[in-house]
Image (cartoon, rainbow, N blue to C red; front, side):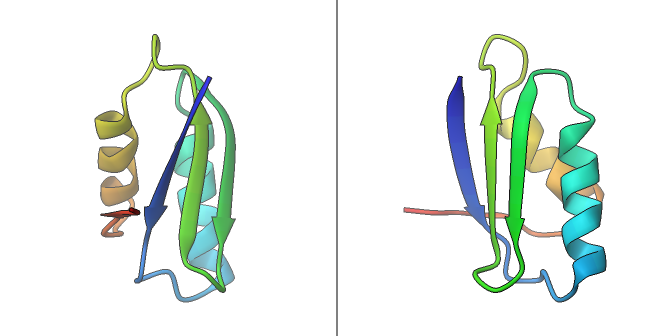
Length: 71
């Protein structure tokens, strides 16, 4: 398992948190999802043999958010 972290500055409410968590949790290969409203960070633990970071990023975008790489 690997972990990927994004900053998502347009997270504004618990509804945003639920939307992102639900969209990512439903993906094949995702083990866990953490979305923090205060820090606006999304952390995903995933199986790189089943899903790529790019697919995860695109899923966040599909629900209306703009994820940015964390350094």
